[in-house]
Amino acid sequence: MLKSNIGPLIKQSKYKREYLQKVLGVSANTLSNWSTGKSIPSLEKAFQLAELLGVQVDDLYDKVEEG
Image (tube, rainbow, N blue to C red):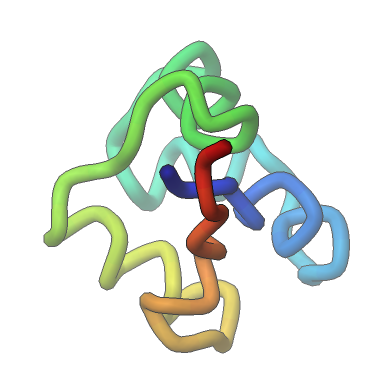
């Protein structure tokens, strides 16, 4: 199972959500779903988002053990 770090990373970044939505070409709902872990970005979008946030792609999520 994966836990999204996207929400906190966006808050720590210099970018507003509206800017990220425009650059990534996604809706507010999509970015919100990525932030809460309701959905995950495509690999291409994940790389774009990580680059914008100044992190590695694997920083966007933490692996959480189930059980």
